[in-house]
Structures are given as C-alpha cells and as structure tokens.
Length: 304
Length: 204
Image 1 (spheres, rainbow over the protein chains, first blue to last red):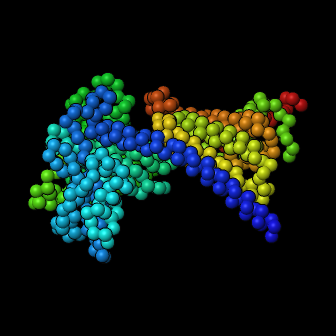
Image 2 (image 1 turned 90 degrees about the horizontal axis):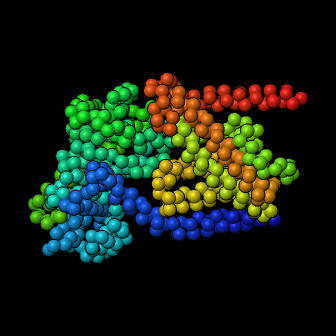
C-alpha cells in the first residue's frame, strides 16, 4: 500500500513538473508563434495570388475577410455572415443572417473595427451584442476576398480536411469563376517522404489552373507522372527561359482537364487532398452564389 | 551495469560504429525504414534526434537518484515528451524557417525506441557529462545511418542527391518504397557484422 502511494505521488509530481515546464515555454513563445503564423499566412496568401519578392503586390490590392457563423436560437439554426461594408470612407462590419432555406432573415450593423476582427474573441463579443441573449454562435469558416482596384480577383479559402493520419490544413485560391489559382499546404502530419510529398510542387501545382467544371469531378489516377509535366510543375527548379510562353500555354492546356496523378506510395494522402479540394470548391461556389444574391437583393454596401 | 569506464571520445565513437542505433542495435527501425527516402529527410530527422537525445539523456542523468524504480519508463517518456514539446514550440516561435522544414520530424520523435532505451541503459546509471557524450554518439550514429540510407535510396530511387539531379534518370523506383528500406538496412547490417568479425579475427 505504502508503495502504491509513493508511486502515485512520484508520478503526479513528475507530471506536474513536466506540465509546468511545457506550460511556461508555451506562454513565453505563444506571442512570437502567433505572429509567425500570421506572417506566414499573409505571405502564403500573396504568394497564391502570384505576388512575391520579384513581383510586389500593387497598392490597389485589398484583402477582405468574410466570417461565417452558425447561429443557434431556440432549436432553429441560421447562418450568419460577417461582411466588410463601406462606411463612408472607412470599412465597417455587418452581420447578415440567413435561414437554412437560404432566405434573408435580418441585418445588423456591428461595432467592431476591421483590424480587430482577426481575434475570434472580439468577433464573438460583437456578435453577441446584436443577437438575442438566447442565441449561441459557433464559428464555421473564413473566406478572404482579394480585390484589385475594387474588382474581385480571387477568393482565398483556408480550410481543413481529413488526411491519412490527422487533418490537413490548406489554403486554396480560386479566381472569380472558381478556377483554381493555386494550392498551398499549410500544416499536415502525413508521413515524411510518402504522404508528406503533398506539400511538394509537383503534387500541389497539379491543381493549378483546373477549371470549375473539372474540379467538380476531380479524382486521382494512379498513372506515373509524365516527366515533361513534372519539370513544368517544379517551378522553383526552372532554369531561365526553360519554358517559353507558348510551351507553358500548351502544357497547361494539355493537362488542365486531366485528373490528379497520385503520389508514389501515398495514394490515400493524394486522394484525401483531392477530395478535400473538390468539396471545398463545390461548397464554396454554392455558398457564395447565394450570398451574392442576398447581398444584391438587399443592397448591402459590401466592400469587395 | 555499473558506471561506464569509457572515455568521452570512446563513447562518441561507440554510438557511431560499435553500437550504431540502426545497424547494430536495430532500434527505431520504423522511422529508419519509413523516412530515409531522401538525404534531406534523413539529415533533418537525425538533427532532431540529436537534440532530443542529448537533452533527455542529460535530464535523466541529472534526476536519476529521484526516480522511483517502478515508474522509470513513464518518467522517461514524460521527459522525452517535454523536450519534444519545448523544442517544437521554440522552433515555431523563433526559427520559423527551420520549423517549416523540421517541425514534422520533431513531433515524430516522442515514440522513438532508441531514446527511451538509451535513457534506461545508460543515462539512468551515469553522470551528466558521460550521458551527454553518449547522447551525442547515439544521435550522430542515428544521423549517420539515416544519411547513408537516404543517400542510397535517393540515388537509386530517384537519381538525385539532396534534390540535385545526379544520374539524369530514375534507376529503380523500388528503392523509394518502405520495403527497400528493410533490404538496405539488412545489407548494411551484414557489412557492419562482417567488418566486426574480420576485425576480431585480426586482433586475435
């Protein structure tokens, strides 16, 4: 008995000590980590739109965040969209509530500054203040609308879908017609060397340029990746003028209606990404069409 | 087993050759087979293992007198997990570039047999300095094994080394698959054994 107590106490103390060490390191590093993650996201978003070191983003480019919430109020569910709207010369936020039949329910002006919307807690407080006290809100997702000189050029969709082991966190860029502009894998825990190859250019760039009609039915094929296509996909390894403009157009045209070539030894990971991207695109296209219809019919002065 | 009588250099060499984690002790075979597909992967995982092994060895050597013998293994696991978490968080916060390349490998390490085994066999019976050198030896031994495997598999499987095209063609895709890892480890193990036997015969 004495032994058991001793063991229990020793184990508890060890766990507590380990907890204290991990906790304090977490507290110390949390801020820098968040900052890095934010920078990384920003960098990725611009990269997906084709801006980078060699091609700085023009000043007319603006990124607007749309937040989607599920609102539950006495057993019925509603969809809540937090939209950036024009308020004189500055930007404000409005909440647009739709019911599950996609019909307009209500509109509320929110008391929140655009730069404060990044923090989920701030958003929640702002939402709570305009809804009835009984309503509960749960966050669903964010969409980023990129507009250049007040014209919508792209949608950026951060999303998560199940991979081979855990969730894969990705960012997808679509143009105004839902053609895929690019895909970036942000975080994953697939096996390095096998499923981990999803973050390599020769896999993720295959999605680039797929039109919406193709994306809807996109699947994985187990054929080997043609050598010419691989060289084209690995943009970072391009030598100067390896591909002329005509070459690029020809290869792009030849492969844009092909399915995704699976990774060697990682068919499940390849399928997971393909299915995830297909579903994300389909659902998003459906949602944004409804949202646009409501925005137009109610004359919401949205910024994007 | 009593305290070791080997010198620090001997301990380091010991980890590299006589008791190489992959080829002699045959531990941590799962990552060795699964991840050693390219030199880069092997290198990054090796570096991650060196850090975790050295830190955990030193910690256990420091607190060995306070560990209840009945809960040795949970304590080792806890130590490794703590160090893995700390390294993961620090990398993410202050070295985002390194984190992007290594983050995924660091998180894998919690379940590595080689680290737990070294803590049990060595660090829990020796002083901090010797444990440090043993940890270094084991870590570098693992790195060496991973790089050898990675180099052969990358060259044979994809015709490249560190991503640079060497051969210009892909000899045998088979080498990229996990099964090839087993074959290769078997062959290299045989070479290690043969060298040892030859060496013993000579010294006799």
